[in-house]
Length: 123
Image 1 (cartoon, helix red, strand yellow):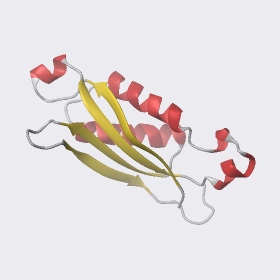
Image 2: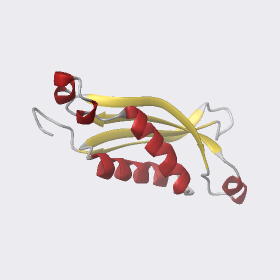
Image 3: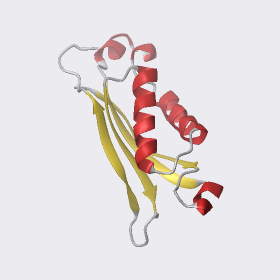
């Protein structure tokens, strides 16, 4: 299975359970791997046949800021569903981190995997 990935996408969003968290923006970081057959894009150097990681990065930030939630678990699930539906991604692994949310930890977060990995010439 081929993968298109984005690592260390860092942005600010409103997220958190506590009242004070709903009044501020906090740093979030996403690592994302998306299953995709890249051969069709590579054959003719055709961006329209691959996943445009710049466009997807912007879409993630816009989505997160337009859909504030309390839990990173909720945001991870919603981003995964959004990306799979919008870009027809058959499989993805998404790691969503909230740096320095816990004293003495560099980051905390969740990692989810959704969909079915591509095999052979699927897509």
